[in-house]
Each structure stands twice: as C-alpha cells, then as structure tokens.
Figure (cartoon, rainbow, N blue to C red):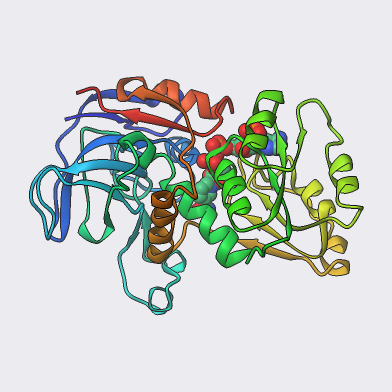
Length: 342
Ligand SMILES: NC(=O)c1ccc[n+]([C@@H]2O[C@H](COP(=O)([O-])OP(=O)(O)OC[C@H]3O[C@@H](n4cnc5c(N)ncnc54)[C@H](OP(=O)(O)O)[C@@H]3O)[C@@H](O)[C@H]2O)c1
C-alpha cells in the first residue's frame, strides 16, 4: 500500500511517500480503508523523535482516522463508515478501572506508539471503532478526534470549567486551542484568546471568543487581558505553548485559578515564579488525551453540532510533507487533513 512514512527521525526531508507492506491485523483488530486522517502537532514531535522513543521503522503517523471497514470484523461489515478512538488501552489496571484510561502506563496512541492512518490501510483494535457521525464527511469526522478528546478531558475533568467562569486560551489556530475555544463556550464560560495575527483573531471571535489580543503585534499582550478582567485574572488558563507564554499565564491566573497544560509547542523549560502559585493558591494541572468514555462524549457533541470540526485545508496524502510544514510554521487555523490518493 501507499503511505506517508519515515525510516529515521528528522526534519521534513525524512518524510517519504511510497510503498510499504500492508498492515498485519492481530486478533481483535480490524483492517480499515482510510478515507481521511488529520495531522496533529504530535506527528511533528514523533517525526523528530525524542530520547526513549523506539519505533518500528518505517513508521506511519496519523492519529485521527476516518475510514471504512476493509473486511468484515467483529460486529462490523465491510464498508461500514467509522472513526477511531486514538487511545489504545493495552492493560486493565487501577487507572482503567476507574475510567482514567489515559493515565494507565498501558495507554498507547495511534500514530505515536502504533502505526497510524497516513496510509491506504490501517489496523486498529475493534474496541476503538465507533460509527462515524452521520452529519460529517470523512475529513470533518477525522479532524476533531484527538484534539476533541484532549480538550474534553482538559476542560471537563481537569479544569472542571464552570458556567460563568472566565477562561483564557493561549493560542488560537491550533487544533487543541480552536477546539478549546468552542468547548469553553459550550460549557458556558466567557472565553478570551491570545491569537497570532488579525486573521486568526477574527476566526477566534467567530468561534465565540469575547476578547482576543494579538501576540504578534503586542508583546505586552497580558496587560490588556489583565485589565479586561478588572485586574482579577482568569479562573482557567489553557497553555499548551509552554516556554514562550508560561510567565504570562502565571501572571494572568486569578486567585484560586487553574492553569492546564497539555503541551509545550515553544519548548518545555519555562521559569516559574512560585510566589504566584502559593499567594494566589493556583493549581497547575497536567492533562493528556482522555478516556474512552470521553471519546464517546466528544462524538455525541459532534453529532449534535455542539462541536464543529475546523478544517484549515485538505491535502492528498502524497503532499503530507506540505501538511507538516503548515503546522511547523503555525499557518493553520484548524486542522490539516490528509486524504489517500486513490
Ligand atoms: N498531552 C496531550 O494529550 C496532547 C494532545 C494534543 C496536543 N498536545 C500538545 O499540545 C500542543 C498543541 O497541539 P496542536 O496539535 O493543537 O498544535 P498546533 O496545531 O501546532 O498549535 C499550536 C498552537 O500554539 C499557539 N502558539 C504558538 N506559539 C505561540 C505564542 N508564542 N504565543 C501564543 N500562542 C502560540 C498557536 O496559536 P496561533 O494559531 O494563534 O498562532 C496554536 O494555537 C502541542 O505541543 C501538542 O504536542 C498534547
């Protein structure tokens, strides 16, 4: 089959599009014909690699999969349209028993630890299959999966965002951030956003942001935000940018505020003035992916139209390198979706 793959970690030039062996399908798994698979920043990290990451090469990324059953499997019939929960549970333990699947050491991510969907075919566990929401195209169904799951756990279970609270999202056009803006509004929060450029600021407003500041034109962007909260600061801050924005996030958190981090797009090492944490009694919360129940909840929101997929562009799989580049350069507002060139 054809796949976007790499045989060694590195920059964009390690990505190749070409023939690889068809996937093996273990017992309890199904073979899917991929119709659409969206990119995440995760695909950039995995392509670059990190100490301790050991993958079977060639590796195929891609966590956000919409496709059809290539053969009958379990209770599914050939041709059934499905989406795939990107979180794979490989063991039952105390975490999975209490519904915290992504905390289990046995939790794996499709496209990270396991070959993913940037290919004509992919093998996935039967238990990860869900019917595709009927109102969505394949690209629309693929786009919000991993980021929807991440945003759901981050806001609902970790931040426990409440109606009427003020939330700040640091960054606008990324998959997680554009989803967090929507979900924050859906949960009844007043959402403020830090956006890179006037076009992205406009898009964030269209998603329901009450106030947007542009970090590219105003280095002191935290000042108008602090003023807008009557100098009280925010109840919840979503910061997956890391090094470039962490100091401002600490400054902008209000008394009893919760800062949630799921990532570090600009770098992992950031200075923390701990006085902000103890004097304002802040909580710094980490979050990763979500549970299988969270995934089902996200699909329900998509089915109801409460969460809308945001697609920056669709590209043929053979142009996947361009997709990686769009994300590396931060050009996107929403998701880049790759579609196999059948
Ligand atoms: N732990 C998990 O389960 C999990 C799940 C998903 C993602 N992540 C991580 O979370 C991060 C975001 O993922 P993604 O796929 O949404 O990435 P992405 O699509 O590449 O988004 C990057 C985001 O960072 C913002 N940004 C970059 N530099 C900024 C700056 N200097 N100031 C303010 N905002 C800035 C961008 O805002 P603009 O668009 O406004 O420029 C954009 O919203 C990545 O690091 C990813 O690895 C973790």
